[in-house]
Image (cartoon, rainbow, N blue to C red; front, side):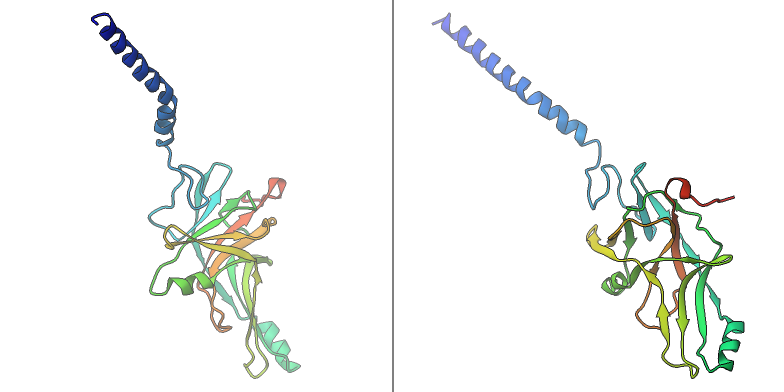
Length: 220
């Protein structure tokens, strides 16, 4: 009996040791993976939505979130052209524009997604107002939207180059994720909160440009 007991104890020790060695690789893998935040909301692992800021673009090349800052719009009344139109009983035009031909924020990936913080008393209304638009470059400005009306000031219409989007909620609905349904071509763009009211004028645009390879604009 004395010879059998040590043998049984040795077998138990070997069995426990074999189980430890079996599960050791899985334990190491779990420990290493916990050092990096898992991918959520379509963001790469380790990238999280910030506590402040409103609009961010996902730069997949690095990867990181790039903050877009609002640019104030300027009004163009097209006074000279409208005077000429009035002489032939044609309605007037106006436009909302951004100064400069190029944005200070450059994105190289036309397939990027954007994350917009939506808050306030009616977040759902803010989600509906989010638009991604292409900006039309003129002599020294970028046109956000144009307005027209008849000679009597009625039938006001609003026109802008709207980009089809896929929208989804992110981060407990505090953030809205938008993704262009097609990759963005090189050019100037902006994210704007736009009402359906034709008289509504946005006061700011979160502008950026997309330039792929040699199509990058000259910032000098």
